[in-house]
Every structure is written in structure tokens, then in C-alpha cells.
Image 1 (spheres, rainbow, N blue to C red):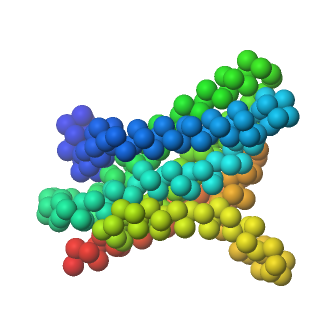
Image 2: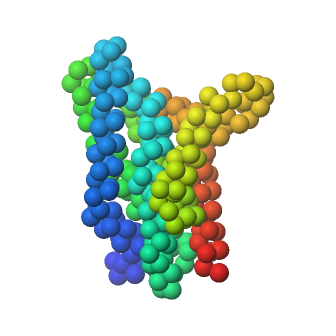
Length: 243
């Protein structure tokens, strides 16, 4: 069984990308900046010190916007760099499918993103030391963070697949993520019926419900559908590039 796993093209590509990820200084720089921004917000700007409340609610409310910048920074090179240097053509001549390549890169990047988020669990320890946190919303927040990371990673992967320029891929993914995050606040001047319809696309709306500990299958299906949508788009882009 282990031999079959080693020969699985998706897993081979995932392992290749993970090695590249953990040997790249960019990943460590992005992760360090992410933790610095989160640390400043958690310890200095949110309710932990200002309101003397041992909770992560404010941290989770800011997470979609923070990840809108940092996940694209991690995913921008996945296809863009390979297209720029021409190695993607070599990769596609191997006995792999476009789906293998996309999923391999996706899972590697998702693991990298979750590793970046993992140290924020330290905030839970801090809350436990200084107070008595409610673990329901905390568990919901980290569950939501996993789905959020999965969706943003698929968006970043798609943006990287449509251009050879990493900076353009970064800004494309940022714009998509930010629009989906802030779409609720952009609709305040529209009629209520239109707002209700379009606000369903809001990542913040679905994430906030999960982060409060309210687990609704509609919110989970939203994130799963959003992730699958951009993965399918990325596969289609690779299929078109191969022709």
C-alpha cells in the first residue's frame, strides 16, 4: 500500500511542493509577518487588553481580512513561477493529469497555510492563563479557519494559474478574497432583497456564524462549493494551456 501511495501522482506533486515550500525563505517571511500582525491585533488592538476579556472573538472576526493578504502571498508562485521558467510544460509531459497537478499543489499549499495559522493556538493558552474562555466559539473559530484557508488557497491557486507574473497573481487573489470578505459592507445602499441575495456570497457572513460555534451545514457547503469552484476553474485553465 505504501508503494502505491508513493506512486500516486497527486501525492508525489504534493510532497514536491511541500519540500519547495519549507525550503523557501518566502514562506517563513510570510508566516512570520502573519504572526506579527495577528499578535499585534490580538494583544494590542482587540478586547484582550482594552476590554479585559479573555476571548478570541475579535481575533476571528479579523481573520478573513488578514488571510486575504497572506494566503495569496503563499500561493502566488505555485503556477506563475513554473509558467515563467517553463517547467510547467515539462511537468505536464509526465504521466500526470491536470487534476493531479492542481490537487497536488493545492493540498501542499493548504498544509502550508494551516501550519502558518497553527501557532495562533498559543492565544488560547494565553486566554486560559488570564481568564476562563468559552471553548465552543474557539473550536468553531478554528474549524471556520480551516474552511476559510481551504477556500482562499483555491482562489490563490486559480489566480496563480492565469498569469506568469507572481505580483499580478498576488493582487488578483487579494482582490477576489477581499471582495468576498467585504461584500456585505459594500451593499448597504442597495435594496434589501438584493442585499440578502448577494450577501450569501459573503465569506465573512458564513465564517462569523461558524466562529460563534453555530455549525450549520449551509455554511460548510458554502465553503466546500467555493473551494471546489475555484479548483475546477484552475483545472480548466491548465487543460486550456495544454492545448
